[in-house]
Length: 455
Picture 1 (cartoon, one colour):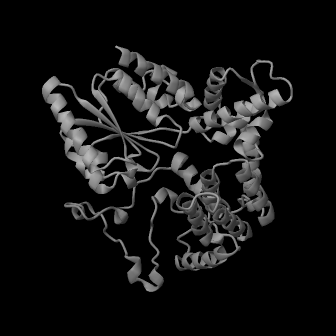
Picture 2: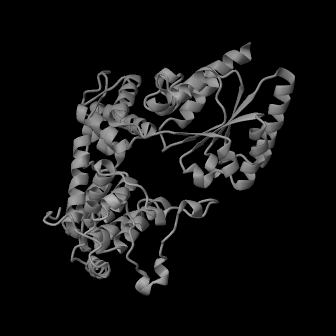
Picture 3: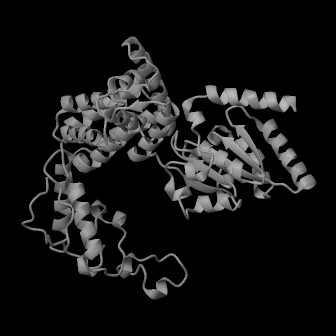
């Protein structure tokens, strides 16, 4: 009895000294902020947890989105034994011990076992293979948590026997709700712009928001004491406290300012101003913007605003995005900067964007003709008797690897979507297409004459 009392007292002291994010970890589904598509009323994962019918699952999402929290909620709700392991420290021996214990537990008490494996992507192939038989026969219900794409990091057989649940970054409103709980727990208040700043720099990560808040509250308390305001009242967190907690000067705070800076960044590169592009890149990085978000925008811009005027632009942007994942900050700033300079200095064309828009309009509202018979699949049994593939001309057997034949439904045969500009590599493409269309002897008709170029 005494041991229980001492153990309880120790647990209470540890809880009181734990980081704010740990102290505020939800204990029930109703306390979870965000992930409504999984744990909101009537959502599928919620139904499985509440009925204790959860099968093996992989929880995939960015840091601070609630993967460990969901596992702890499962632990509290299930009648099965819940065994947590970290893939960072556990090995094959630990996995085999868990499996042996699960078999014994099932035989002696009829109780199943849930194994929560945090950072499951850190398990190598051999370690994952050791789990597979137990998962396959249902001896263990595996809950794996990962920040990495499980299709790359988890064995295909193990993944195929698990349900993949994807967690999304928290929205600004959801982060502000989490911050509100943190302020209440710390018995503190905060200025509205400080709350907006905390939500903006957290980038969808609830744990990061609470960690920054905890430091900011400590700084606010110290500042007020130094200013003679330390009368025991609640500390009030200011924007300056958040700036110091982040060890950086915040350059965008609320959602509107965030999108304004992104807009300025994109428009500077589109406008071929590398210096402005670099400036806004520096502003966003200094403000704590997620480098992955910036990289995604550059990849989109490479096709949207440069396109075939410089086909290498997409390669450079994609390489910068991969460098962000592989190298990480701060070094990946150089890769992003190189991509910004390349895209800003590249010849510009939006003709791919315009062409896709035209094609989508016909696909959505235009005539929906059948696939021409000579283009249909002729490889399966009986296709030839149906006339599939009859009359198809293999372009590689023709001079210049080009042949004039119909590739679209007859109803759309005359539509022209892609009209290359005279800028950069696209001028070469324009010349090539003109030659091919001339070879067609009028088979292709431009029904978009007089349409103004969309810039």
